[in-house]
Image (cartoon, rainbow, N blue to C red):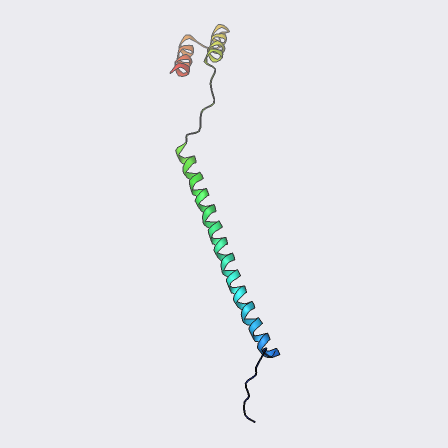
Length: 98
């Protein structure tokens, strides 16, 4: 029996084969795009972590503010109560002011 080419629409087997090729290609492209998005998100996260670590390393932790007048009054009260000697009072005052 000689081969007679078909004219018109493809047969059921041809349609199934074409659908499989299109589906496989679409899946491969979709997976590739998802992988690229995931890698990019990971790289952005790592860059943000690096920048945060650099900022933390550069910026010193600020010391809590000290109310000098209140601290000097406390030292004066301790000295007047006899809990601090003159030398201890002078040393503590020098630490606060210096």
